[in-house]
Length: 95
Image (cartoon, rainbow, N blue to C red):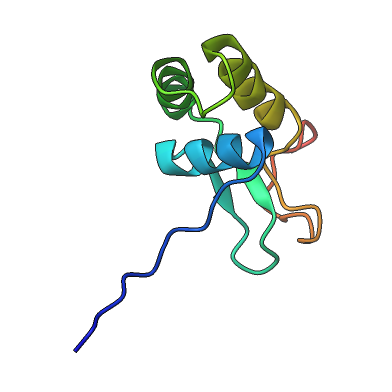
C-alpha cells in the first residue's frame, strides 16, 4: 500500500515565518477560545527565537531582516486576547 506523508504547509511570508519561529520557541501562544496570538513575555523564549532567526533565516531574507521581523511581530501583539473579557484578578493600584 502506498503511504503518503502529509507535507507541512509552506510559509509564504516573512511574518508567517516569524510567527512560526516564535511559537516553536515558546515566545507566543494562542488564546484557546479565540485563536489570537499572545506574547508570553518570556525573555528566554524571545532570545531563542532571535537566535533561530540569526542562525537560520528563511530563504531570501538576511539574518538582520529575520531578526527584525521577529521583533516586529512581538511589538505588534499584546499579552492578552483582545476578545477575552478583562480578568477580575488583574492587579489594581487601588487594591
